[in-house]
Length: 210
Image (cartoon, rainbow, N blue to C red):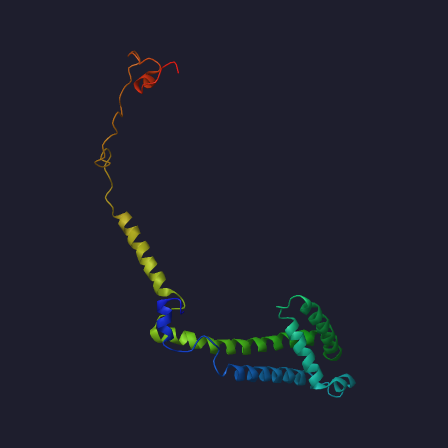
């Protein structure tokens, strides 16, 4: 925005080049909230299995961490050595969860945990983006759907179409005031003598035999 005069005017002395002051606290709050979401999913899924030996041996926290690892591993974005480390850890987490809850339940829990994480991340980023979009909204400078611009384009196209429709046709033989090119329609007399070869050379002062 600073590189453009219009954008620089929108800044108006606001400090938008860095994150908001409360971002760190908001990130911590969203992370703790998601952790609570995951543990809640594990408790809900294990409500009928609390008497089983496997559920009791691992506990809610261990199963919750395993579900978090599995949810992160399925989101992608890992490169290099991270792929191997996360892949091996995710396999162990998946096997642990499947031993307690079964295959179908683990797939469902993973999807739900990832969706809840997405909701919290979007909420966090939208809050930061509002610092910028709020400046545009206050000026009425943003039309997300581009409707007014498309309406103007449609009006121009309609006007051009109407102009072509009502344009007077040009009568045959009256294609304008253009004049024929000089020499157009001239009939060449084949019997007329032609200049000898080398005419242009002699005219330019060069020897015809050169």
